[in-house]
Image (cartoon, rainbow, N blue to C red; front, side):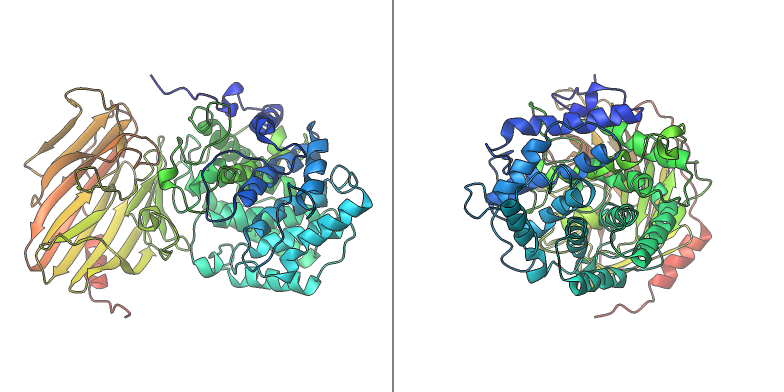
Length: 613
């Protein structure tokens, strides 16, 4: 029986209409009232800490719900706690108050992140925020917000926080340094990697920060510009970029609405689909028709409705498909997950907007994989899932927990997610969708990527896991099968372990009748959560099935993975692997596809490329 959420506020209704989504937004916010300080500024949702001060974590709990509250009200929905918001703005920005959030006192201050939500509220709801404060409170709030002009946000998506604050100050008539806003907008322009894509500034990543930060905030800017705020040319540029990006972004989701989990900050959960609603709020027609945009948004929210994402009292936990801090980040506080409220941007559109007035439509099935060069993805989709084969374009940053697992696996699935690289209690280490090499001294390396790229239908990478080992890899296909071709040049003996997708299972099931491994180079996991198979097309490795450490997988707390294992003596080795996965235990497995000649030729070509030192 599927796990029933203990207190998932999304589970209370069908999530089909605008009224359903308005109700969902209020239901997600309501549990916070039980954890709010007397004057409303501090929302304490847990006892664990992030890398910043606990009072800033409590500011997160106050400010992040505003991303849902503001469009809820702008689009005609009801919200009955503006008095609490106004009181919190007063107390939180007052240095004499015990609930003071503290000043923005340095560059890259976490408070800047939360100021953006307040700026959004001032820009769109000044009557219930700014106008509800007395003159002294207005002065204090303005002074506190202007901290983002006296110190510098991080040179990445953070620059847009200054822009949102400026929109709020402009709406209420407070002066600010417009040259610094232009500087931030110029920096955002410099992060573009093509007409419609961005890299996340100094972070360098191409991940969900592209849609849920750059494009969603850009579309909020467009919506504010319709009120006479900001710069018309900047707004037109944001609208054009988002409209074009939508045509690529539609491929990041499976047919059931599930996003392909990839990259950092996934605890923001359904923020992944925020751009779809933001298109409606800004009234920007995109490369995707409105019925499909609506379907993308609504199916995604419904996908989350039966996941155990909340604690017993309805407070959203850190994690993804369940409560799991193991795959979070050091900057995730108990209030961090409420960036999920950005999903509700679509509520800002009027009832008669095509986003709400049309019936949902499914995104079309793919006749062949789609190559997203800016992301380094080759994506395929069938009736059950979407799979991305990865040519990593994002560097692994040491401050991103489990960075290699989040960015550099060979493949990611909307149905099976991915797993962290954690050691089991006995010291053994297994993971999913990875080629892992271990030398004779026990040194273990998940290949570090030195070169990567895409060609039509192919993703490729060159990795240097050890100084005297080079791994050339080509990935082809998608669903339900994909192929991995490796050319390995090693001057030291290696143990090679290659894994497929991880499948959830119940640990008290005896005998594991659905999993098997055999000496003729195949391993299969068949559980209630689906089927995962790896097959060695050259018959030089043996199959194995391994249980991953508990809570290693982002989708299921208990998961197991099929693995191929082989020893590679010094020399040159060619490996070919067929990988199958389907999220049904009764799936009939078709014959694996043959290796395309073009893929084999690409493998030979990349093996001769020079690797930069």
